[in-house]
Image (cartoon, rainbow, N blue to C red):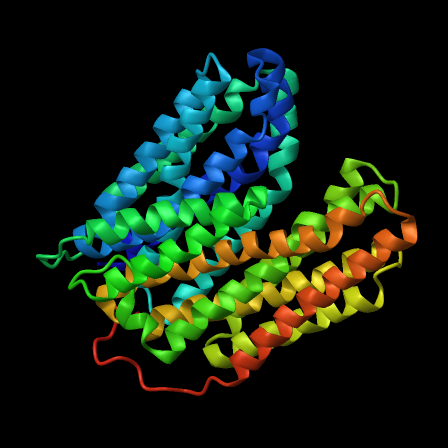
Amino acid sequence: MNEFNKRWTAIGLVVGVFLAAMEGSIVATAMPEVIKDLGGEHLYALPFSMYLLTTTISSPIWGKLSDIFGRKIIYVSGVILFLLGSAGSGASQSMEMLIWMRILQGLGAGCITPLTFIINADMFSVVRRARVQGYMSAVWGFSGLVGPLLGGFIVDWVSWRYVFYLNIPFGISALIMVMMYYKEQITKSDFKLDWIGTILFTGSASLLVYGLEVINSWMIIAGIIGLFVSWMIDSRHPYPLLPIQSLRMKIPRSAMNLNFLAGMAYFGILAFLPLYVQRVESKGATTAGLVLTPMIVGWTITNIIGGRILSRVSLFFLTRLGFFILVIGFICFVLFYNSSIYHLATCGFFVGSGMGFSMLGTLLTAQEYSPRSELGSSTSSVMFARTIGGSVGVSILSAIIAQNLDSSLTTIQNSFWWAYLTCTAFAICAFIISISHSKAPLPDQDIHSNPS
């Protein structure tokens, strides 16, 4: 694959990342108008939760399917599903229809993000890949910042339906560029997906994620048991859904554990920091949103820096540096838990900066040390672990904070202190695991199709 094709494929992937990232922030702005138009106030949360649920649980399946059938056909399929869901969401005449279209969108989004990083890994060596992912992170951060503003403008001046229709030109552009310029070498495979394990995994993951969202202990227990059983079935199948070989290797397995712990800490704080600003500081929703901005900016900046310095440092150093900064950020939250929102925003910047370095390092490490036959499923499983960790973290912090929200101001502040301390413990565990890594020989089967 020549340099020209690689460059335009990467541009197409960046457009796809913009598409997926924008969707995560722009729809929330439109939902009050959607409810006003379609009704169904009691279903308000479902367009969000079902989108996130289907995005989360479908990611490992898309990754494995790309290992079997090739990257291009799976990526194209995911974008088409996303566009169909977007068009259907914009044309929805009821909340029930909108929910089903958001499910379709979520299935497509579950493909776009992991396949972007998988194709990037196929095209470039680790150093160039890190730089491209830095650009993707910048696009993701930019989307997170402008999405709510753009959504508000569209709703106020056009119609909420165009919040969804906006996806179509970007999606078509990404689709055309990847179809035209991405040239992959497909090795004929006799792989057959473990359908029993896949169905059990999907159902169990759905139960676990939804159970964590609604704090239903029976769903959580059933989901965990189901995932364990699906692992047992998968590990005995010749063509498993999960990256069994990678999970038996120390470094890819540790990368997934690190993403799980980081997700618990980061997304837990991300969910509750706005609540602190509104409930304790008595500020509005706009201020609450602005407090989160440094976290996003920090992640974006260090992801770009990490991509630039990787030619001079190792992946292991980058990962350790990230988790060290993450620990410092959460210690700052513990020390300044009752300070001004400016102090909290600064703490958030450190946390986001730590995530930028560490998440780039762990993803690239997992890709480098996983067998090529499991590159897709290993990449998507790392991202899946981070999302599941986020769900667990939000549930744990909810148990600490939610019960005290109607108490005195001091009690609420103390509950947030315990929440910050809990997240610090998650970050310290991750840092300890990261420093236990040492350089290891790469697998016999190099994952790079064209190291350049």
